[in-house]
Every structure is written in structure tokens, then in C-alpha cells.
Length: 432
Image 1 (tube, rainbow, N blue to C red):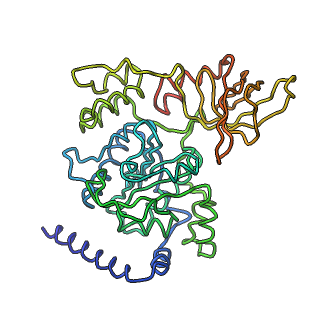
Image 2 (image 1 turned 180 degrees about the vertical axis):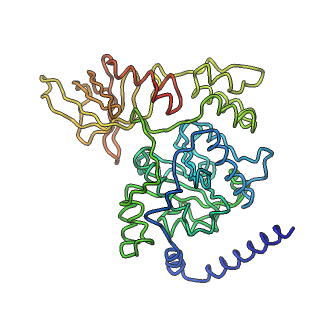
Image 3 (image 1 turned 45 degrees about the vertical axis):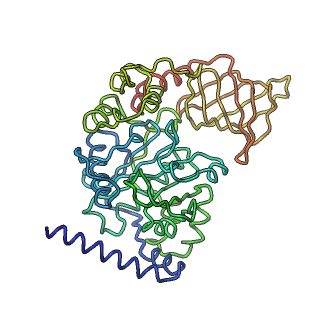
């Protein structure tokens, strides 16, 4: 009972402080938030930040998240003691964890756009963000263990640093979007330069148990200049521009990838079954459309044994699939046109590929129908050389995008496609 009273007292105190802050002009409130920043450029070696990949790490992340969301009123207690959403089941979602002395003390998830879109797009319009081109990732499921919530950002800032570095270097992301409680939006605006998607507060956000929410976005392409303007003269432990864009933290364990893919999926069939069928019944509660979409993602027999059947026991095998499945990738390449076409060399940024072709960004104009030899670096030690021709052009403010058809895949290309089609986790690709 005393714990409940202390919790209620703290909530009233925090609300009173927020009410006092609200009386200050916006510029003074933001300046006050920034004075509270304490980002240690050399965190304690006991802190390790990594992609959550084991059953134990994921279970700890989902438990911390559950307790934080229940405490904030963003969800009702679940019998499992875990907060597990459908988005955690997707290969396009990556969950990060912060570990202290081997124990998970913080977590954050990044959701890349997949077959179910983003959680926040159910209530917020992302059209203005999409108009600026570039991949989008929703930052969600952020929580810190209660024992570390009063440490001045000792867990929060390293997690944010890891998130930023991962999105830029590994997730092929330009825009971050968030949906947060109105009480917390000014922290993201003042410290991290997020910009609101709309001025109006959404009064009932289903993904957070009907709590009010504010949507916001951050353009990572322009963020460094904005941070330099805000923090250019700040002291080292308060300079988030230096912390995010120029510091390297030895505590961060970056993923190792065989290929230049844009995701680090970890959900094996066993983990999918454990978290979404046994510990929770997340998959069984889906409607038939969502069940069918899951079947379109997980097409191997090992996964399909744990996927939910449609109503009446129907198996969605009749779905229309592409002739060649497409895979997201971010790798450099170059195209040398045939001698009879001038022999020019064009630098490419390959963003998607399949057994029969690829899509790439090119700053120069490539005439439709032109052809030549394409050299693509699929991974650090994986190179492919194929004959390719330009079959379509898509213009945008982010550059020129071109679709290529290849005459015949070489061995390296086939190995990469086979690895991506036969497995769904990062470990599968390493051992393919």
C-alpha cells in the first residue's frame, strides 16, 4: 500500500512540476531541458548495447516494456508480463537492448516499413514525410528499468546514440517518426530536434491503450546541421551534436553482416512460436488478412508450422506472389555501358534486388534501354558482375531511380538471393 501511495505522490509532484514549466515561454522551457542533458562520452564498461537476439534478451526487453507501459497507463497488465506486438514478429523490426553487468536494463525498437505499415499511421498522416523521399523508421517501445531511470540519461542517451548510428549505417533510414504522450513531446523537440507532424493532439491512440499522443519526425539527412546550431557551444557532457555525430562509443556492439542488407531479423520459428503463440496469443488473434500477410513473409516450411491458420482452417497458398521475390539492400555498384553506347561509367546505389534484376539510385541520367556490365558489391567480401539493361526510370527529388533487368545472374548473385530466400534471420545469412 505504501508503494502505491508513493507512486501516486510522485505522479502528483511530476504533474505539478509540468504545470509550472508550462508557465514559462517555450524558449526558456527548451533551454531548461537542454541544461539537464548529461551524455557521458565514455560510459562505464559494464554497459553494453547490442541487437536483442536471444530468447533471454528479448524476454527481458518485453518485460521491461510491459512494466513501463502498465505503469504509464499505456496498456493493461498482460498475464504473460510481456508487451509483445505484431510488429515485433516482423523481420523489418529491430529491437535494441542496453545491458548492465549482463542484465537487460533498457530497450528500444525500430520499425521499418513492412506489410503492416507503421503503428502511428493509423492516426497520423505521413504524407508530408513521404514527400521528402527516403526510408522511414518508427521509433517505438522505449523503456528503461526503474533502477536506472534516475541516472541522468546513463542508459537513455547511449540507447539513443545506438539507435541513431544503427539507422544511418545499417537501417538505410532517412526519417524517424515517433508517437509519444503530450507530456513528453517537448523533450524530443528540445533535445532531439523532432518536429511535430501536426499541432493537434490525438486524443485516443489505440496502440497505447487509448492514451493521447503527439506525432513527430526527424530528418536524419539535415539533423547534424540542426544539432550543431543548437549545441555548437555546449560543454562536452551536454553537447549532443558531438555525442551523436562525432563520438564513437566502445560500448556499442554493431551487427556483423555478410551482405549489405537493411535488416537484422532474429525471429527464428522457435522464437516466433514462443513469444507469439505460447507466451501470448498475438498471432491467433489476427484477422484473416493479417494472417495471410504473415504467410506471404514467412514462406519456408519451418515458419509455416507455427503460423496461424485462417478461419475454417484455410491455408493461404493461393496468394499472388512476384515472379521473383524482392529484397531490400543498400550496396554500391557501377555500370559500364557497352562500347557501342559510349562506354561511360555510372556510379550506382543499389537499394533493392531479386533474381532477375535490381533497382538503383544514380545521380546521372541513364537512358532507358541502355545496357552494359554492372559490378555490384553485395557484401564486404561478396562481389557480383552481371550484364544489365535499364528498363525503367523513376524521378524524384531524392535523385533518379532506375530499374534494371539482368541477362543472367552469376554465382555470387545466386548465392545472395538463395540466402535471403531460404532464411529469415541474420544468423541464417552468416551461415548460408
